[in-house]
Amino acid sequence: MTSGGEDFAQQRVRELAARVLRSGVTGRGAGTAAPAGELLDPVPIRSPGGEPAGWWVPLAAGGRLLGFLQFDDALRFRRSSSFQRRPGDLASCPPLADWTDPARILERARIRASPGDRLDSPFLSFDANPDRLAWAVPATTPDGERKIIFVAGDAVYLAS
Amino acid sequence: MSSEKPLANQRPAIAELSLMLLTRTLPPSLEGARIEPQGTVIHDLNGKPLFRRLALTGAGVSGYADVAIAPELGAPLVAVSHGQAWDEHGLLAEGKRVAANRFKVADAAQVQFVAYSFPKIALRFFDRDNKELLLLELWTWERVPERRETKEPPGNFERWSYLDETPPEVLRAKAENHDRRQAALGRLAERVQSFTLLDRISSSELEVVLALPPGSLFGDSRDLHYGTHTADHVPCYELHGQETSVWCVAASVQMLLDFYRYEYTQVRLAQEMGLGTLANPSPLLFGQEHKVVDTLQKLTGNALTANLNTSPSWGEFRSEILANRPLISFIPGHSRTVAGYTESGILNIIEGLTPFHGLLVYDPWPPNMGVITRYENFDAQTYRDTFTAHVTLQ
Image 1 (cartoon, each protein chain N blue to C red):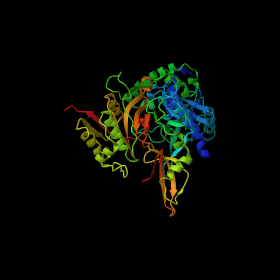
Image 2: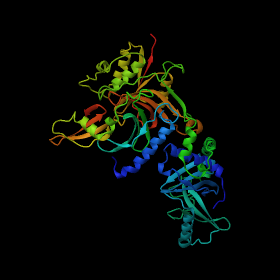
Image 3: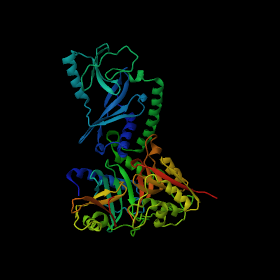
Image 4: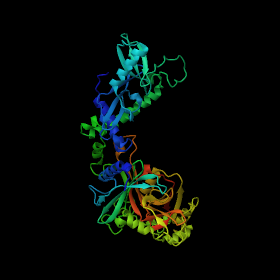
């Protein structure tokens, strides 16, 4: 989900991601053996404090997350990453929902939540460095204490 | 204004504009911006043509590009500005109105745009004998004072000649640089057989040229091989996801040791480096980087000699990969390994331009999975430390 102000940037990121794929930089797409997968909608990345920190563009096929492209907040290409160990490998790729379905992410976060904690909507964030992408789930204890639960695929832990 | 039409000479500078858009040096909003073909000639204070200002226009676009006429400016493309429109005729009309009303100069025989204090521009009004009547700074419409008789450097609002007052050796060096760059950009422009490159900024034109044939974008690439022979299988490297949220260093050390056929678990490596246990893990603390070096050497019986470098450079990454050796790369808050590199072939076409530098990164994040990053933009990353290791024959 993006706010109205992010729509333009999201569209721009979508175009950039398609262009990066076409260029062959990633080893995917035209002229390469690796399947390109389908580019999904760019997702904004925010720091755990909520500041904009770039964009994440998932690449998916067959319900699996093949990899992703990442851009920084200035829309500069940061990296293209793959879960595939080698061309055609799908076994190493996580289920797409692990990284894109808020309901599943919230469900995972409950593993680390305490009884009575109120969980807010997850947002894509990072732990310590933007290369350590994780969904951040803000949690509030019954005493009003706020904390962040990180969900990175099947890894779930409290922010230190 | 000038009737010169050196479109062929402008082509390299316009190619550079498109290249700057492709490499995101210019904002994407300039994609497709039209370039006014003739532009406005801006003269040096000594009267010689200095550069040509070309208006950039289009939907939501206002700006201009300054293209050198005098090679002594140092580069074919002197400057690009976006956000402020260039309206030669409007400025001339406004300047003439101010000259007549405020300074009583209504009968000038000629008016020139002049870089009175490069890159600041004024309108210069001449009489029929080619004598200056008035020098009016653009936009402020203040009269530029007469030249002071002093050897002091010029002040903020003072006229001086770029061509006459810049030291000759500096002008010579700049002219040589201009000619080299003009020739290199010209070679790029020749590869684009489209007229559109002359009248608009278009990264897609260059994208096609640079991306075809496949692989031509990359002038220099190398991944880790099984051995140093190019025919050996590649990439000879395996990814390990970190087994806890804080064991990126353990996973990185594991990947590097794996390459040399030393198999250790992350639990064992964590024990060696004091990173706790699976149930109670802890990160490698700042200041304990030496433990990586110690571990690499100890767990290989000193078959590996490891080194820590606190000033990583592109050259180091490249030379280690060419020597077929992986590196551990620390970035703020994280550790990964590097198993390859690529360098954009743009360098082969355009001298002096920054090429794309990419690293093949085996990243242990996210936990239990990791990702293979092909490629990481070297210029968009902050590198803290690298750890290298090489085999030492006893």
